[in-house]
Image (cartoon, rainbow, N blue to C red; front, side, top):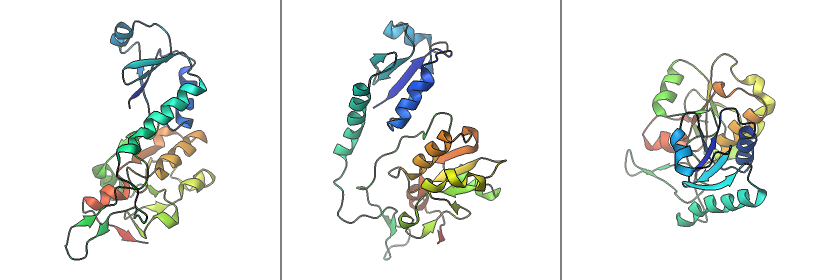
Length: 226
């Protein structure tokens, strides 16, 4: 499901609508009428903001609570086409001891995360994490200790997502930090990022590694034991 906020750059309601969607854990993108006149031409509605879902205008102006709840139900529908959750799951890929370079992945746990953790927060990949590490820049493992499976990315520091706001003074004040967790199925780093933003931490000092431990391990990259 693709959610768009279409608005003028001066719209006072746009930041309010963004906060509503963030609080509902609904991923979205913003497009401005000034930059995309084709949107006005397509929908023939000169109202700001518009909430557009899968190319259909769902509301003009601020949507009501019922509309937001409907969208939350619809986005959860993605879970209905996934494999059923296993009784006992593992959050990171496990090595297959009999075969070097092969891992076993549990596809049944967690909830699929959006590509962008929050507005104005850049999502990065393995290349960026690697070069960040080579420069000795901060990489934050946002997982709670009981979800780490005792491995992490070399050079990272662990600050659980629910402690980050009270420990903001431990974050680098001069360079952006990369935040990660167990990967695309894990919400811990997205929660960490949203908590920091809500506490006033600047978005330009936040980088989101969505791939997390899942992608790091499946690409054969080195890990450190905790």
